[in-house]
Length: 224
Image 1 (cartoon, rainbow, N blue to C red):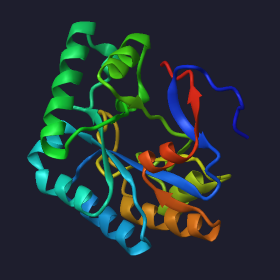
Image 2 (image 1 turned 30 degrees about the vertical axis):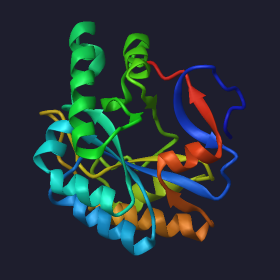
Image 3 (image 1 turned 90 degrees about the vertical axis):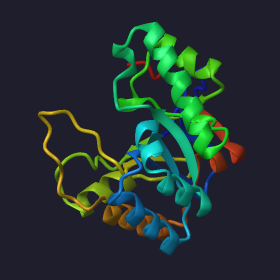
């Protein structure tokens, strides 16, 4: 059950008043192997999604960014690399966010959505994002697809109690720590299973921008 309390500021976690759609989001890419297969799955389902990209990868794999946009999906900024922004000095965090935004805009045009790596932010990094013109986007459902379990289990976790207005966190890329094992599950298959289940519930998969234009944001006091 979603809280009815809307904070005047905060991270967008989901949406009210969007009963027939959910937003699919993919982090950490673009990835040479997974991103094309995810795009194939989205096209097969007639679904749209938002890709929160790392600019170092986006620049190196600009052909994938072009395909994402050409196929009607949306690009948001994740950061330049998958570092925890809250571990950086304020000066470094600001400079890297500014440069990452500029570099991504050169590839994708103006970008208005931002999701910090690990979902980690404090009041200052949130303010930086807002000063740069970003809406900060979190999530209300996750596929937990960075852990080694089955695609079916991952999709079930993402779709359990799924309702219109939810924002689903998934990954096309996957940035893990040195001690973390790389999961063997097929993340494109996870997307396929989630989309199939969403369709059974009468829910269409759209971009974050699309549901932002339709509903009222549920904002979270998302500082961690």
